[in-house]
Image (cartoon, each protein chain N blue to C red):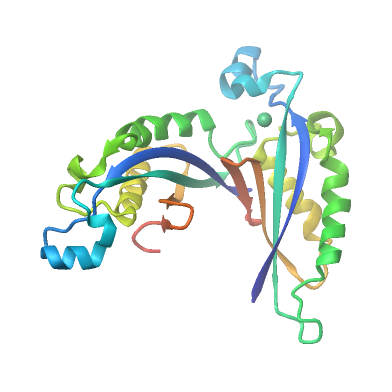
Amino acid sequence: MKAHLSRRYLFSASHRLHSEAMSEQENQSTYGKCNNPFGHGHNYTVEVTVSGPVDRKTGMVCNLVDLDGFIEREVLARYGHENLNVLPEFAQEVPTTENLCIQIYEIVQRGFPYAHLERVRLEETMMNSFEYAGKAV
Amino acid sequence: MVYLTRKAEFSASHYYHNPDFTPEENRRVFGKCNNPNGHGHNYTLEVTVKGEVDPRSGFVVDLKQLKEIMHREVLDAMDHRFLNKEVPEFLHQIPTTENIAVAIWQRLVTKLENARLHRVRVYETPDLFVDFYGEA
Ligand SMILES: [Zn+2]
């Protein structure tokens, strides 16, 4: 029996949307308030969905202690209470929630060995959310 | 194809224990959930069915019927129960959220008329849920 397990985590971070490839004018018209020079923050909710056979011995797709530990160390500790713009992955890339969602997907995809990653959903506010399920999808 | 989702809530208690594990193994794998006295959750169940819209009724499924089936097959059996001791599926199977979703799927899948079961989603807490699509 293959099941999908989803777990939701919270972190807060700040960012400024600004692209070096655009003029001042273009940055303002593209990003609006999100382009304000000192940045602003969000309470992000990240929802990680993994899948796999339900292990007969444990009744689980994967042990939550493993998943929680991994996300805590690799995602929440990395992004929680940080300014995303100063992190190396956003040196060349605008820290939009789309790009952050892809980064988180890549981290889990590369590093979490205990179940198959289905998708990462990132909620920036209650109104906006983004999902990434890998290149092919 | 249209998808329709009906929600329900139930409260139940459970604990995680595998009789084939040693006591240490049980504690290591299941942590606090291994406490034999059990603990409880307010579960939220979402049942999604799919089908074509009936041209006469405009419905994918008669919601009243779906609600009745969910009550009869799932809530009557699981609401305000100690899952390990009172629900047949969990006498010999650990009532994890995964297994609860599978059990609910199996209880519902043959009972629906007209519409087909698409997904069973069980929230153990707002931060943790399992989806089962009937995949082997
Ligand atoms: Zn529990």
